[in-house]
Image 1 (cartoon, one colour):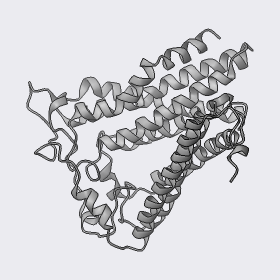
Image 2 (tube, rainbow, N blue to C red):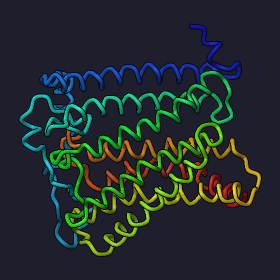
Image 3 (cartoon, rainbow, N blue to C red):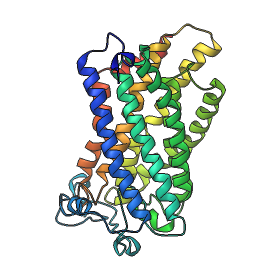
Length: 355
């Protein structure tokens, strides 16, 4: 393969090595993930490597977790967690896998595994595409690999939204054991709002990162409307619980952790909608390349944050017990802290405000 046809003359050697290394790493990880999926479909026992990861998981606390702590103690430094453990259908099956966060229970489990294999393929493809875009001059790049990566990033994000929605709809009652219940009274509608706000935010940011390059602007307007209709009741419910639930209960703690993850979504809509209002309604000029680059960085931010949110709540591969809340919150917030510290957030907001 002649790499000169893929990269522009200005792409340095380090960037080329990073992009190629990312591709190789993604292929290896894809092989591992798809192998797990095929093993599950064939209902074969977990592999020695999988078992070794389970056996080597770090034990963070003596107790698996507690759902409440004594008044007067600091819950952020207590082994507080959901108290959930593997359901019998999972733990008794040799074919289960939490790697895909879906097990072998219910009539739809094979469909979920297949869809998850496609979903994870999309995630790894996006991972490679983002690296290719970022290290080939970002939104301003025009090399073959840059243009290919932008198109792949845009359409793969939409395909992942489809597969992610199917996984959400195909959940079995057993799967809910892996996702802590926020409130038994209204968890269904709140879960739906959280999922919609979470999933549509990825579409919105991916669209803004490719605005006027791919997709219809009317579709973007519809996405923003759906997103806003989802996060308004979501934020009202979560903020209300922050002041009504007991500070010493896991319900309050998970509510707080969820807020640290989802409170970014309203900001994304507000600032990006402000840009649309000033440019499409008031017809003001705007630096669209900078806007696309801002949203490319934001997409990386929310992707990394989401991954670390799930890692922080892992009780199987990396950790055998719950992390204490302080550690979990650090996992969730450090990408945003980097975003703020590098002034990328302020530059994006000020650019929109001054348009």
